[in-house]
Image (tube, rainbow, N blue to C red; front, side, top):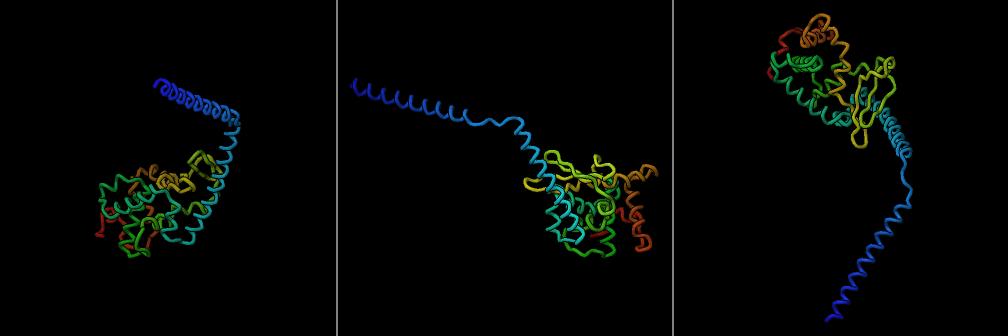
Length: 239
């Protein structure tokens, strides 16, 4: 009986020793592998940033081409962040339901989009049956026409955020982009207030509300084309 116990203990000791030697060998072999230095990590990071920078320029050119060619909704949405899509759905719902009090809480670009949406509905100007706010903002509002009228500065990338400004002031962004796993997407929610900042300065000088400025801009664009470009658009028009 003692002989059997001794054999069992001996077998266990051999197993433990073998396991420990294996771990030691593994540790030694891993210690022989080259350690990635800070300089190597920095070089890899810079290479990744350079690739993302090039991809941002390519994405922007493709986006401009899609808008210029009046691409379908499916194509356009691929260029926009998911949050931008949700926001446009919400804004379209506001266009159908917001009264004058709720409208007064909107920023200029939101108020203008809502008034323009109501004008399109009242004058039967729609050429699409769905994603109407998407088409309105990219085609009808002229918000993004800026990119075709001015020289844009060099793109900049910092981690998962990309930006571009005017060539005359490249450090002041007017368009913002988010990195989405493998590609860039335009953050329309954050871009629009940057694009319309200059227009909003007019409201400050004249001491107008954002809604009044939106109506003024609408009248300026469609003057003499449609009747009742007035405060009747501040209320839902019966969708």
